[in-house]
Amino acid sequence: MGKVEVSNDELRTVRDAMRELNRMVDALESGTSEKFVLCQNNRMRAVVISLETFAQLREALSTLEEPNSAIAA
Figure 1 (cartoon, rainbow, N blue to C red):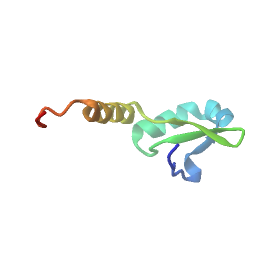
Figure 2: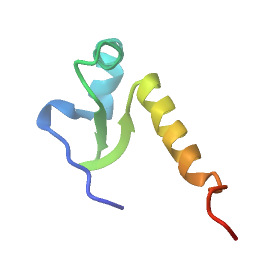
Figure 3: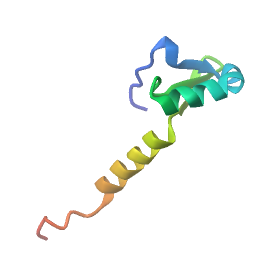
Figure 4: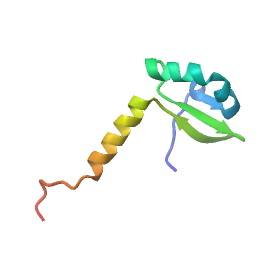
């Protein structure tokens, strides 16, 4: 797994995330937070991002996966 940079403000335990989910979603939607990293048993386990960010990542991935028609075979 690649290196993940996380600030203390972005870290949440799974238990805390369950209690704070509404606030986390609001922060992601408003752009005041980019992501939240969920930890369980002192290990980073998951990342929560906004739907907009997810859509942008999917779009970028599909663009990279498309065959480049400009390259001659």
